[in-house]
Length: 291
Ligand code: R5P
Image (cartoon, rainbow, N blue to C red):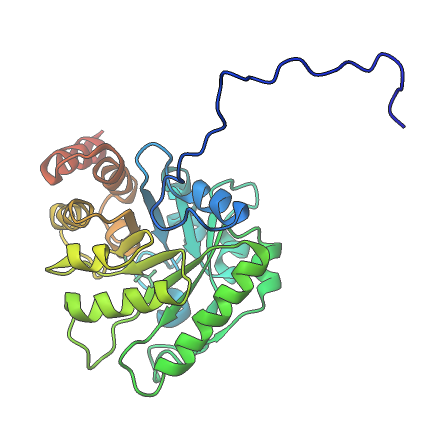
């Protein structure tokens, strides 16, 4: 029991300092729960409002693809230069030290590989996300794929239900349907479907007309890097997406397949957080590569 004597009445109520009623710094998330805001604040830099997520979940579909043969050697050393690590439970547990303090975006859908029909995915148990201290849960939707659209949208809808229960934000990942044109109409539709189903973050691809995709998606949008490009082109991709209003990147191959991954992730960070132009970012890449 607290002491009953010497109880001091409060006398410092800050009467001249109104309570802060300013909105949350990331778009579309002002009405979400404290826990979701707290977790996305670990992912998105407070000053720039953007993020460099490092994606290395490719193996669950593609096996040990180039650059991901040894995640302990190739990815773990990059972690401190990323704002968030996106991977599967198996690779994170096996290859990323538990002392890592970077937020984890856990890939939570699984089920198929590139050798069969993709996207017949199911969700892993939400207890995994909680036990791994995930700051975000990611699942893919296959908009426009007649066989898998319904199951993947049901997946993300259920994942948001789970996320709401435990205040873990969901990142909707827009898959590229084989029959779909890779244009802003398709990605705009897919991104919007993620947001409509309650995703707090949407990952999609940069296309011409990307400003419309971002404008019509009321939560932060990040772009995947896609297939490996020359470093300058990858920096241009990130820059163009930021100019269109993207809140950062969730980039994989253009970092870990670069000839100098550490220099590349730092250069991407310069473009995303420090507003470097692609040329400035490429100069930084070359300086770091040759240092
Ligand atoms: C795609 O479903 C995977 O989630 C990758 O994480 C994503 O495509 C980002 O990687 P990359 O920049 O290599 O495209």
